[in-house]
Structures are given as structure tokens and as C-alpha cells.
Length: 137
Image 1 (tube, one colour):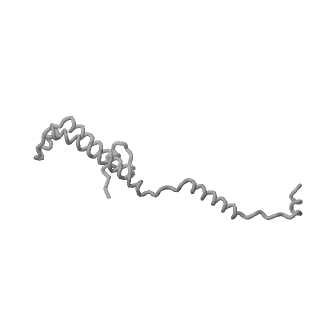
Image 2 (cartoon, rainbow, N blue to C red):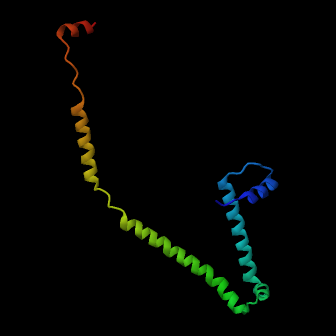
Image 3 (cartoon, rainbow, N blue to C red):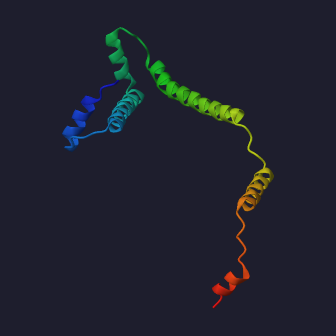
């Protein structure tokens, strides 16, 4: 179980609320992660030298051209694979779903059910002539 207590604390300090559901905590975490990735992407895209300096402290060496290539290639690759997975999922769903019944078959079943219900209804008992005379004013 992941503990999102730190997000609750941050939200409590910002909004003044003390109650936060688990879904809100997960949504806050997703928001923060996406915001950090977007900032990293924008900074690296427009200031690749800064990124090269940062990874240079780790001991990795690269060029500006390599950074510019990969900062574009990775999101394009991820988006392309995501589209392929969605297409594969649609194909799998279509391949494993049985075909629907023809409309004619559905309408005949409905008509048969109506006929069965009419046949099962009890017939009204016939009143005698004396009872009929009593009902008439």
C-alpha cells in the first residue's frame, strides 16, 4: 500500500482542508509527476546545455545533438507504441466478441414471449345472467 500522507499534508497547507480521499491523493501525485516531467522536458528541449552539465556531474558525456534527438525521439516513440497498443486492444476486442443476433431473430423472440404471456393469462370467468343484471343499473 502506497502512503500518500505527504500529499495530504501539502494539500492541507495549501487549501486549508483536512479531509482528502485516496482518489484525490492519487490525483495530486499524478498532477505533481506530470508537472515535473513537463518542466524537465521543456527545460531540456530549449536548454540542452543545462542538461548536459547536470549529467556531466554524474560522469556521463553526451553532445547537444544527441540530447536534442532523444528529447524528441522518446516521446514520439512512446506515443507511437501507445497508438499501436490501443489498435491491438481494439482488434483483440473485435476478434473475441461474438457477433450479435440478427434483428429478425430478436423480433421473433419478443413476439413469441408476448404470445406466451397472453396464453398464460387466466381468462375472466363468465358471469351468469343474474350477476350481469345486478351489475347493470
